[in-house]
Figure 1: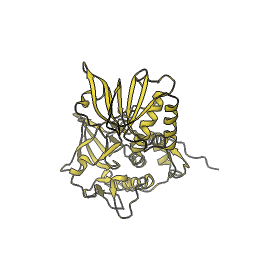
Figure 2: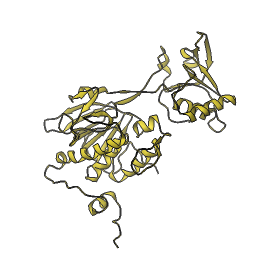
Figure 3: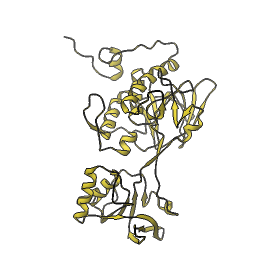
Figure 4: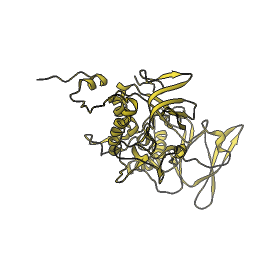
Length: 366
C-alpha cells in the first residue's frame, strides 16, 4: 500500500502548540532532496520534507516522468518516475514526513542557533538544520493570461494536472506544445474508459517541444480523426451562468475561431522561481546559493544547499552530482545535531549499525 506522504511514517519530531521541533528540514522533494533524506537517515537523523508540488519527485516527476534517464550509476536506463519511485522506496526505513503542496515562506535563525521555518499553509517548524534542495526554485505553472479566466481555475481550467479522472465524455481543449500536452491529448482521444467527447489541441505553431514518439502519436490520432489540432493562440473565452462554455482561438491569419468546451487544460511549462529564498540572508550568485565544497554549507551555518540550487567552482548540474553533495551535507550537519558525538564513516555492506537502521539482515558469512 502506498504511504500517505502528507503524514508521518514513524515518529520524526516533537510537536508543541503546533510547532514541529525536528533535527532536519529538507526543502525540495526532487531526487536530490529524497537522497538527502537517505543520507541523513544513515546517520540516524530523521527529516521533514517540504515541496511546492502536490507529489514528490521534482523535475523528473513533473517534466519528464516517462522519459529515459541514462546517467544514474548502475542503472543503465530508467524513466524519471521510476527513479523517483526507487528513491521513495529507498528512504522508507527512515520515517520522513512529507508536507506537499506548500512553499517555505519564512526562515529565521533563533538565538539558540536553530531555525524557525513556516510554510504558505501555516505549517511551522523549529529545526537544528535546514537543507535546500529546491532545484532551480519552486516550480510554478506558466499561466494562460486571459482577463477573468482565473475565475474558472480548478473547476474547468487546470494549469497543474496529473489525473484523467472526471474528464471522460467531456469536450476538452488542451493548450501547449510539450510532451505533457501531446500525451494527454492522445490519451483523452484514444478509445477507452477515459475517452473524451472531443479533444482539440491548440499550439501557437505547427512545431513542438516534444519527443518524436509523442509527436507521432498525436499526428496519428489526428489522421484517425480522433482529435483536432489547431495552430493559433487563445485570445478570449465565452461563459454562461458562471460556466466556461468556449475558448476563442486566433489563427496565424488573424481569424478567430470559437471552440466549445467543458474543460481547458493548459500546459505552457513551468517557471522556476527562487521566491522567498532570496530573502533569507544567504549569499546568492546568479540566482544560485553559494556553498563550500566540504560540507555544502551556505553562508549561514546550519543551512546547506544541494543540487541545482547551489553554485561553486566546477559545478555540474547533474543528479549524480547532487547525490554526492547530499552525502557531504549530511555529515556536515551531524556536528549541529550531535555536538558531543564523533560521527564515523560506516559502510552499508559491513556495518551492523547501518543494517539495523536500514532494517535489513546482516549478510551471511562463508
